[in-house]
Amino acid sequence: MFLGIDLGTSGVKSVIIDAGQTLVAEASSSPLEIRRAQPGWSEQHPDLWWNAVCESLDALTASHPAAMAEVAGIGLSGQMYGATVLDAADRPLRPAILWNDTRSSAECAELAAAVPDLLDHVGRAPTPGVTASKLMWLRRHEPNTFDAVRMVLLPKDYIRLRLSGDKASDLADSSGTMWVDLAARDWSGTMLAASGMDRSQMPRLCEGTEATGTLRAALAQRWGMRHRPVIAGGGGDNACGACGTGVIEDGEGTVSLGTSGVLFVANDRPRPAGAFAIETLCHAVPDRWHQMSVVLSATSCLSWLGARLKRSPAELVALLGEDPRPATDLIFVPFLDGCWSPRSDGSMRGGFMGLAHQHDDAAMAQAVMQGVSFAIRDCAEAFRVGGGELRRLLAIGGGSRSKLWVSMLATSLGVELDVPRSSALGAAFGAARLGMIAATGAPPRDVLTRPDIALTVGPQTAHADSYDHAFQRWQAFARLC
Image 1 (cartoon, rainbow, N blue to C red):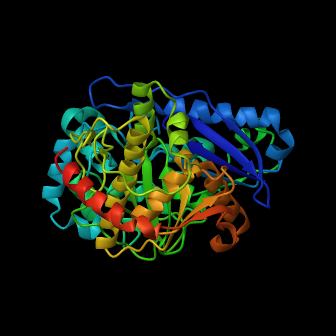
Image 2 (spheres, one colour; image 1 turned 60 degrees about the vertical axis):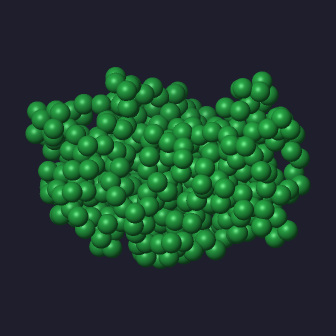
């Protein structure tokens, strides 16, 4: 048996899979609260994470004791970028500053000025989400705390410390800090020095498939495990999600239609995105990298429209049916929460353009779905400018249940989209797969296989011209928002 633990921003999900990768059990924690003491701030105390992990594993022990007893490997996944700062006794000095905290904009500019060639080191410009700028903020605004920092861990790596006592981090998660040289797959002395840090404050780096240690004996006893399972390096949540769907080869990827929209593509070498706000990171498997972009508002845009029209999102989608249709002339830009990719501009906002008397609920729903698809296409165009290829993508997330929305995406991107048959392919599942590799030594390609496909949707050539024309109008309007 193999256990995957995914530490999310809102809670912890843990799963057990067997040797055939069948899902045996799953459990989730109570919701985690985010502390927002000031506008733009987002913090959680690491003790909340540990309590949530224990809650989920205690639940699995109670519901599936036989399966927990046979766990041989554990994989970790988690929310990325969070700055967890520890003192000399490995105690948190303050609440962790999370990925969606935006207080460090000034420090991003400072870091970019300090390292003019930082794209050659880390592949992208700094944003307030990254860990490096958070530590620079601490240096300026909480100097006593900064001076006491002896170790910086990412959220899931704090869980590793509590599980095994090891200070280690995988390259996929750590490359999001802006302290890792992508090509060398090692800490960058240049980037560390520019933010006032040094290697002694960093954990040991490993691949996501490597074993970093074993579970503490007392915890193995608590959860009824016959042996002390090994713990894999694991990865950030998106890299683990890609491991869950078998996306590890160059040009393979996923496009996720969830609350946010995520385009994730695996690469066989680093592909820096230059001026675009596209993340270029190490993958959770050796000798692989990935590019990733995020559209902050995806299915949440349909939820927003439904609330205004007093209809559920499912009702709005049902109004349109499933058959492919040409692009609508009504334009919608989905930046309700600002824009992260391919331009980083938190001040951008969404809107309709071209509303007329004939546009009813269905027309607005189609415009919203099309607008989200175009925002993802905008990110894909930035990938391609940097030399990235999109050969074949898996469509995942709640929005992928709409065949029409998948068709819109396929036509917008010019790529065939496969819809997996199973929905149990999230980050916790990918983490469990990494735990299996670490425990068994199996080759990653043998474990990280692609899922069974329920449906394949290709671009609609009959509608391609209408989509291209509408996309050009969409881009022009998006630049004004």
